[in-house]
Image (cartoon, rainbow, N blue to C red; front, top):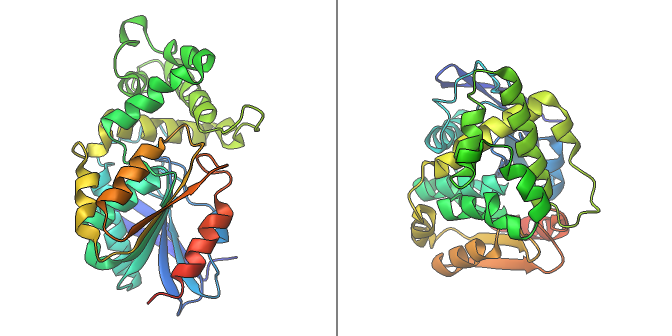
Length: 310
């Protein structure tokens, strides 16, 4: 599906955010909140929607994808790239497109950003549909960067050994972020490779699955590694359990959380706690699915059901 409208939105700080809209111009508005941070929003996201019914907005979060400047350029600063900036960008985009309320649809990091937006702008949200649900707490970051070594010990040791020995017992996201600020370009580039190799391992459901080819692209790899480590070292600039406490106020906003029971990258515990704290939230657990693979049919069914709500 080709978009019927697209553009670059000036969100300040020298950033232009790419956006596009596809589907039915008079349809139910939905905005896709992509993962990463830094993955970008490709056309594959449209498969989750009936485009005869939905008006779907895709956008690339600042610093990645088709937004400019892209942090794949080492010279581009990350100072004006935080969760607070991204939430403000989303609200500016909604206003720019003249949308009163929209459904939030996102996964992985997009679950964190989608929840942060919903908690701050509940009056602008019609429904929330999230998968691979995480909230980027320090505990969750520790799980992915350290505790997952109990699941993939060989790969984790390589990941850990990618940082200087004196940093191996500390915050590994912070250690990798510092490596990507190293004056030696070769050190920075290697750190991006090492980070993405670990990312590709822990999100996979089975070792037989093919590696993600996006990491073969140098610009994508550096963009992704810089943004993920930047956000994770700061726990997304959110207070401990800020989003868990915040969803208590979303009682009037219907929510559906879809999570694979075999998602070892993002523990089911987070989605479970959110569903218990959020009145009217439904948790759907897919027994044979992981962090993303195996969820598409369920997600399409959810958006199909949501399309009938006003």
